[in-house]
Image 1 (cartoon, helix red, strand yellow):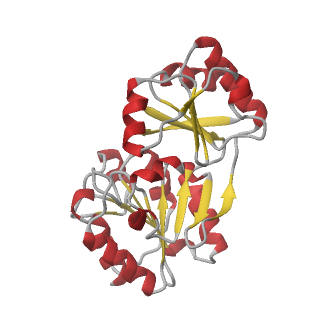
Image 2 (tube, rainbow, N blue to C red; image 1 turned 180 degrees about the horizontal axis):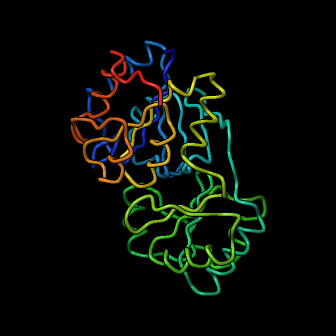
Length: 270
């Protein structure tokens, strides 16, 4: 067994319910990095969503794998290493439909955040992030011409999802949390993003550990060398994991995981 890549989901996994990280977990991450291992966040979050984390907790890891695996950012110099965009023609069709039907669609492209209409739910989240999205009313304001990293749908997610299912095979969506779907280019997934990063770092498959708690983590837990579910995970996530932690996300599950990793308690090959 060699250098490890520990890829952790953020919400409900690496951070507590208030978006903070426990002191023990932060110390454990630093210890793992000093030992030569690579630590990454892997999340459905976009760049704008990362603002809910404190700076020291946002950048404590080596890499961000964002947009459900569609974007890889190296933290030391903020360089984007990989970015899979939704093709312009597909963006145009989805946006045109949402404008025509007066459906809310959120555009997420780097630090750009736009919405086709504002809702109270979106405004509440905007207050948490500390950024108010731009409300747009026309295709010309959307900025779709060069492709877009991704979209989100919340209040009108069912109708948006039905349109994608019927007319847009070039994209797909996942439930990242209750009442929200993340929309990405087809072929994008958390596991694919992790695999791209691991290959670029010459980290073997058996040395990839993934950690999660929700439906959109199942694929990466199944495919990694070791898949770990935190104690607060959904039953379906625990069912596919190789290990389940004793502690939950509010009680330093990350510290537990890293301690066991450093003591070779997760060394195994599927």
